[in-house]
Length: 260
Image (cartoon, rainbow, N blue to C red; front, side, top):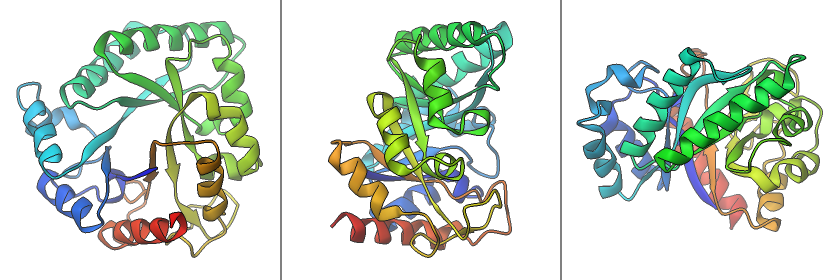
């Protein structure tokens, strides 16, 4: 398994500072979400079509992969023109950045589950044309793996899953139950710790809360998962959280101890 972190945890940093932070923690990759204070990467010169390949090269020169591009795209039915345009922009950017994966959301589930499946099918087909993959996060109405996988039953396996362990755990699934459900489509893993199993944003340093971090790592190892374990610290949404420049290196240290 490889280690990454989402830039949601260090939202004010620019690309050079993100690279420095990743190298300080000896990370393998970075998951792009917030840069320079915004989640609108298209507004930043570093991610313009003419400059995105050079940005990717800066990460590569530091021994880092841009592991995932976190879009805000949410599919709740057939892929409408507005959703499709936003999805295509993200897929194109991922291709320019040599990023293998684009994270999307799905739901809320409605009576038109066939329409939702059709939308995800269309999105997966579009992603294949760009040479990347899309993966739906266990999040919101789809926090339970069971609900998400029931929608994906009729969707080709080129559409994967981003397993946010905290969301499934707080939704009442054990680590083993969730992994058994998502393992055939598992493309990426989000991991963090919290003080309680409730809905509060009471995130704490990795290893200091109630999340069974060791159980997660062992379970993934047992099924041969070789992708990224990505630290998602929601500093962009919750500014009161501890500075990501402190907790991001701590996550890497803690995970390496668990993985040893």
